[in-house]
Length: 252
Image (tube, rainbow, N blue to C red; front, side, top):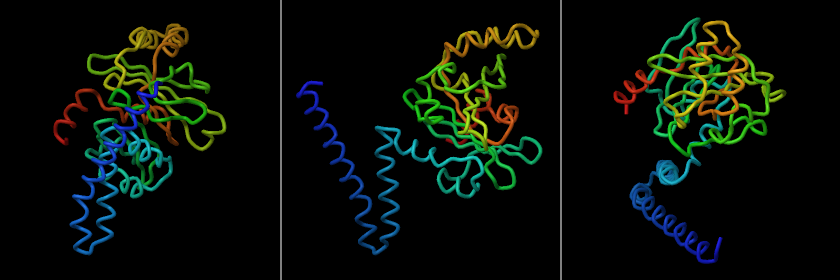
């Protein structure tokens, strides 16, 4: 990078910080003047996060980093708010959906405990770090580049939806919960090779593993998850594109 480029980047960063500080001050100073300091602090934090979120994904990555299988539902709601949609699945399991313009978060809940969760990237460039040293930034590696052993998988290719989900054995990092990776047709990254062929092969009891290997080598996940749940429960929680569009139009 040239000196001129560095200087230009610094000037843009300084201008952004100046605008952010001025905007936040305009909102919070009247509140501070009224003597409600704690509320002013909350407003400052929220305003800064919104400003940063306009240009980066840092606040979203930070929030998603708090997620763990086994956490209390109330704790999750403190971070993400109330879900826009909740659906009952089976055996006391429910799915709670949190719609963000950058991602779709689904919490799988039983008796007030988050048994598992999934995240689908909905926006180009939204690439949270996933699976630690075993993975990378979501959407920047193929399934075959995951440093784990692929397990069970589910392939779906119908008129209304298309998806590929798999469990991944990540060794010691997933002893108490399972890791999941997937591709969903309404997530970021619209191309997948061989999914229709894999779906047909599964239905016809054909040579699925060869086709699956090809798909894994050419497709980048836009979906990840963790949980103490079978893959079938995660599959049941996936919204179809039609359902997603309906909920987004109704709740956003």
